[in-house]
Amino acid sequence: MTDMDTFPEDDRRWFMHIGYLAQNWAAVETTLDGIVRQIHTQYGGVRGELEPPQAFNRKRTYIRKAFAAHPALVGFSEGMEGLLDTATRLAEIRHWALHSGWAESDAATTMLRRYSRAEPLKLEERQFSIDDIYSAAVECASLMLTLSLFGRRAFGLMTQEQIEEFISKFAGQVGTPLPSDDPAS
Image: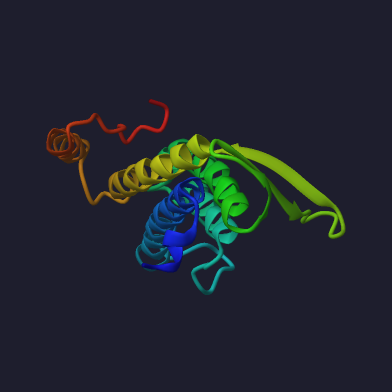
């Protein structure tokens, strides 16, 4: 018997879904690290940035600047912007899930509380369902794959045909359609 065995089943489900979200977000962050490193080493980085950024918000800014400024990447700037917007939304959900206190909870929903970033003495609340957390985790997994393929295409590491072949082969293996590398679709 482990300590987790002493928790009610509903709580264990919440913990499992939050862990799944944390793991899949880590995959998104690692993929963003790869994009940052590619920009830094192969494209000369971003003017004024001596070292690749580590924090998500700084990575996001760095990638946006690079895609807007570098001639080989500018054509992919709008698509990358959409992916970074999705990452920002998912980062906020992950932040709530991992850095908040549980105020009220049942099998389907929980009210989370945290101190405001803007007003340090103010408590903020947000309600999540277990499906919200699970959906964000699944979306993180999809985003990681989409960012990876989009980055490979933007950096000239894969052609559009190679990406389509990969998606087709992978979708056949897992039995589900995967998102295209076009964030608009």
